[in-house]
Image (cartoon, rainbow, N blue to C red; front, side):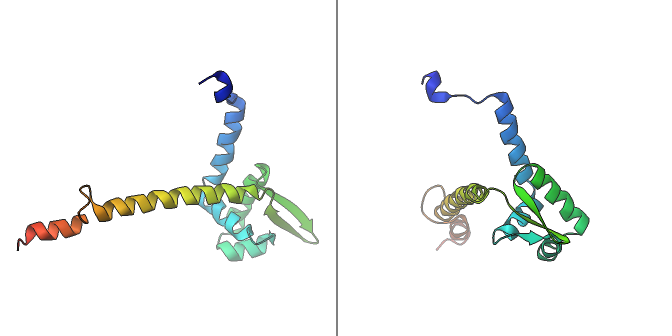
Length: 131
């Protein structure tokens, strides 16, 4: 492998990437993203949809807006929040797909067991009650 193949990122870029993932590592913020998938919502709508207190929701909205994940659009007396870059949903779907694949593999391993002859519960029962 040559240096051109690897193209290492600078520490500053890696820090920015890590900061972006830190914002997305909070379950509450992922819930907010799910709510905003269908379009912009104001704070009252998001409070009702998530069940969060207004103070808690506002804290998360501020963090997500500062990170560039959400944008805030004032409309009359309300402010509407929307996803600033829909690619965040592509990222989330990719992560979900990877987790789903891993869980399916684990379930298959559990069903087949290490020898491939059946699940662990079935083998245990057969060993406990010889025919």
